[in-house]
Length: 298
Image (cartoon, rainbow, N blue to C red; front, side):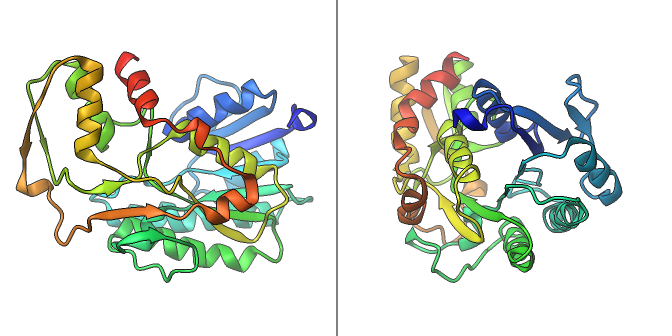
């Protein structure tokens, strides 16, 4: 990693939840980091850019000439009501990026594109990359279509597609489950409305995901789709138990029928066998209790 320091890395969606953590990790390692935002930036290495504007995106890439590119910009909230925007950003924004890269006068060392474990849909048990994806919502479907379009660039660009499973950490929007739970304890609320709390899901640390991304980025792996997951699932009830221990009080859970998904499966987790075959085991960066403690005290 040390000999790669000072190399230029370009991150789309750099001011998002994952992008902010990834940027800080790269800066700590000595990389020269640039990226796009959707709002006016304060950082001179951040560029306000709509990834649906292919010309603007291309001009930024030509001026920076990054050696590594991480594509995170996306509509990532499953319950987003703007269906057209989900498809536009997640599919055509990605195609714009790849076409802009095609127009560069050099080939970046690696392009990492974040898809999602949501492409698998509601399949019970441990999910691996050999399975046939069956997305059940527009977000998951948009990511699967995106993956299929990206594959056409495998022969001309050094691409790896990641399928991260659920992860959380400081800075994640409160509309997501774990930040919602943590904020209720921070505010000393007596009760919380949730859906089914007896389902098992992965809740990995954003630090774990970022470490996996960097290791994949600087590896020799390309033209692959790989889960970014721990293979460990935990139920919501245990999350609540940990938070009660951290906060020092018990909270009353009310099950809101509107939050209960139809035909929800009991256990959903990813297989990390392919991931660990590429980069080894990063689970030492992945303690849920440590993550919850940091979020609570932040």
